[in-house]
Image (cartoon, rainbow, N blue to C red; front, side, top):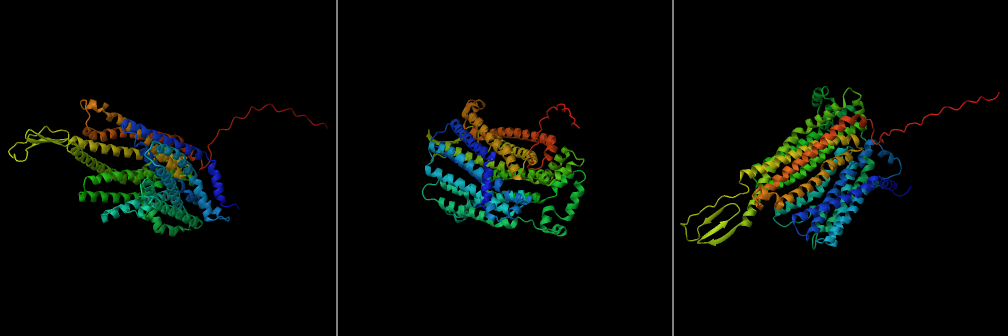
Amino acid sequence: MNWLPVVNRELRVAARKRSTFWLRVAAALTALVIGSACMLLNTLQGSGTSGLGSILFSVLTWLCLGAGLSAGLFFTSDCLSEEKREGTLGLLFLTDLRGYDVALGKLLATSLRGFYALLAVLPILAIALLMGGVTGAQFWKSALALVNALFFSLAAGMLVSALSRDSQKALMATLFLLLLLAVGGPIADAIISTNKSGGFEAFWCLSSPAYVLVTASAWGGSNYWIALLVTQLLGWAMLAGASALVPHTWQEKKKTGVMSRQGWSYAWRYGGARRRLQLRRKLIGPQPVAWLVCRERWQSLGLWAVTILILAGFGATLIEQEPMETWIFWNGLGYIFWALVYLWAASQACRFPLEARRSGLLELVLATPLSERQIVAGQWRALVRMFGLPLLLLLGVQLSASTLSQLGYQRIATQAATVTSSVVTNQSGGWTSQTASVTTTVPPPGKAGAQATPAPRRFQIGSDPWQMAAGAASSGLGVLSTVANLLALGWFGMWMGMTSKSANLATLKTILFVQIIPGFVITFGIGLVMMTAMSGMLFGRLFGGSSSALTSLVWWPLLSAVLGAAVVVAKDIGFIVWSRKKLHSSFREQAARSLGQPRFVALPPLPATAAPPPVIAAPR
């Protein structure tokens, strides 16, 4: 047998796939479009070109880092667990293959596309090197850090996949592991340095691939090579763990019917006997599909646990009366949290259709008197029943935190404007203090009898009711956009579950088509419109021919929120309508196709049959 035969076969198969070619083309085009958009926005803003190279390099490298860390979620977190579910992994170990043969084969097969896509982006990064502001050492160290992050993420997904059997649990476990290593270390070092009242000392963050990229651009002595070595050791350790575990974890444990229903794991997944009986009596008659989806409750319990923790933290922050700037930090964490919620929503929406197709349950349901619309409506009602209330509570926290964050931004803007616009002069025996909000005349030292003459009150940030209303309206529009995104992810994810071959592929396509690609387009479009508006053409007409910096600070969030919410809601409505139409019209056709089966192709018509030749009797 050849050395590493699985690796040889998987590389040959991956090299012949069309996605291997098209993914690197798409990666290069995406980096080119993003770089062009950054340069165009920089030109409209009127900034100089001295720092454009470093800005473009930072934007592209951090986007590549996010894509590299996401590779383990969608490429390797379910590669081994899928083989376990299909029962094909045990067939490999009937031969003389070892665990490292299978693990390395799966790793190289799944990482080839991501590695080629990263190589296609590196020439675009080199353009930023030619523009200036980026050194050659920084470029090569950053490229090495991106390759390291890709390998680290893929190795983490392999380890989780070797331990798991369920696709959704593997996805969430990989996400938790990557967040713990990539984000947990820097946060822990920041908390330790704050408590010690000293400088930042890197210890736990040496295990973070993001910290490796940060130190790649540091001048002088840095921990770049130490952090790179630590992350490489961790990556190879996770890969070695997957190679050692996969020969022993592919077997399915034997469970008896009575004991399995009395165990704590079964109760955690489906609830107690009383809960199962009540749910069956309530839903199996009017909504049988909703009962099928609602049987498993561990996803709902997990979301409730996260909701309770967030509510407790929000209430504690309110009781402690923290500074207004704390809510800016809350708002920043909210963006990361809702990105994770979007990922979870997409995974949950596509889970039931795909598993029902794989197990044959969907064909049995279609054999009943239920129509396609009733099946689709049953799944949607089950999703709303399981996750509607905790999501409403989380949206309320988002609205409150975002509103308080707007007030914190206004306070900071007020202080900055007051400091920069204060002018103190000595005029006709009195000191005149002019600020951005109030102009008063203060008696000079030694003249206590002088009267202070207040000037007319001007526009002041943070105290005007209209500004507070603008902040609340911006927060409300943000919540509206979040609700629309969740609805679009749910409907589009259901359709992707009907048309995809694996749960991770369905989740990736849902997030990519509904959030990531439209997000880049909307961000660039809104930035282009707002740059044009803030240049004075719009505000000069609205405010009597002049646009002050204070007015811009007030109306910028509101105008961008209105424009962004309108575009996002329109986009989400389009995805919802299209997905509902496809589900209602093509549901039975998609259910009739088994996973991996090619599409039905109409056979060409048979040629017209000619008259049969005459039969010649044989001579007697």
